[in-house]
Length: 484
Image 1: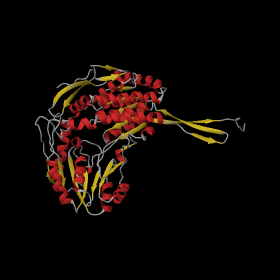
Image 2: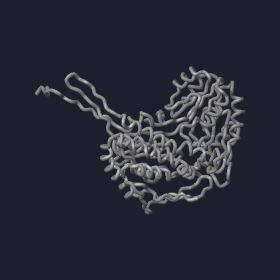
Image 3: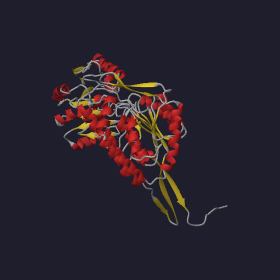
Image 4: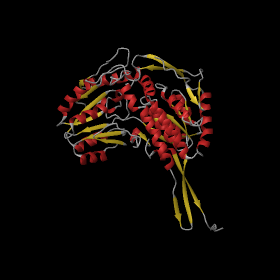
C-alpha cells in the first residue's frame, strides 16, 4: 500500500523534487503505516514557485474569461472521471471512509471548478452616467494568491481556493497541510492536463515556516487560509504587514438547537451528521447540541441506539461508516478532552474510549449528556467524534447561551415551526446556518464565519469580492475645468 507521488512539489507545470528539504512522512491513519514521503520546500523551491506564479499570472489575466472557464470545466470533468482513484487516495491520506470520500471530497472539488467556470464570464463592471462625463468600473484579478489548506478536506480545499482564484485571472500557490500532502498534487496535475498554462497552480509542501515565507512575500496579493484560530492569528498578522487581501476559515464550537417539536429521527440524524462525519473532524460541526427538555430523554435514547450502530473499521472497506482520526497527535488530544468531560461531571452516554483496529487511531463515537456551559468540552473545539448534549427550556435562554462563545462559524436549528426556525437563526451569531439540516455546503452557498471563526467567505458569488478588485475609470468628454 504505497501512495508515493512522482515528486514532492508541482511547480511551473511540472513535478519538482528537492531532497534537501526536511522529510515529511505520510501515514495511513488506520494502520500507522508510512505510505509516502515528501520533502519540505527549500528556499529555492519556494522562490521557483513564486517567480513562476508571478510571471504566468500576468498572461493569464489577459485571457478571455470564457477561455479560462473552458479549462476549469475540463478539469472538473477529469476529476469526475477519476473520482474513484482520487477518493482512494484521499482515504489513504486522511483515513476517512471510502463511502464518504467518493461523495464528499473530489466530487465537491469538481463542483467548485464547474461552478466558477460558469461564473467567470459573467463578472463584469458597471457604468455610472454623470451628465456629460461618465465612469466605468473594471473587475481585475488580485495577482498571486496563496492558499493554505487543512488536513480534513485536502482535495476539496485545494479546489475551493484554486477554482475562484483561477477563474478570475489570478495564480495560486497552494500549500497543503503537512499531514495530508498528496491530494493537492493530483489536483495540480489534472488542472494542467486540462490545459492550464504552467505556473498558475503550484503546490509546495511544508510546515508552518513554509507558509510564513509565502504569506510574507511582496509578490503575494492574497492569502486564503483554512485552519485553526491560533494559526489564523499568525497568518493574519503576517499578511497585514504587507496589507494583503485575506480570507480565513477558522475553527468553531457551533451550536445545534433542537426544539421539542422537531422530528425526532431528523433531529438525531442531524446531530450525528453534525458530530461524527469525518470522525468529527469538521470545522463547522455542531458540537454543542442544545436539546429542549421535553424531548431530551427520547432524543438521548434514540441517539445512543444510532450512535452505537455506527460501523468503525478499515476506511477502505465500503461498509465502514467511520474511520480513524487523522494522526496520533489528534488521537491524544481528543482522548484528553474525553477525560476532561468525565472529570468535570458530564454523563457519558456512549463511547469514550479507543476502538476499532488496534493499530489505528480510532475512537468510538462519544456522547456526553448533562453538559453545562462552563465545561471544557462545551467551550473548546475538540475536532473529534465527541458530542456534548446540553439541556434548555426557553428559546431566549438557548439563543443567549448559543452565542456565548468566541466562535461564530456555524449554527443549526431543528424545529417543526419554521417561523421559529427563521427567528432563531436571525438571532444566532454565526456565518453559516441551517434549519432542519446540518453541514450541507453546496458551492453555490457562501461559507464562512464571524467573530474568531474567520473573515471573508468562500464559494458562491461572494468569492468575486475576495479574488478581484474594482478599478474605477473617470472619462471626461469635455474640456478640463481648472481654476489655475
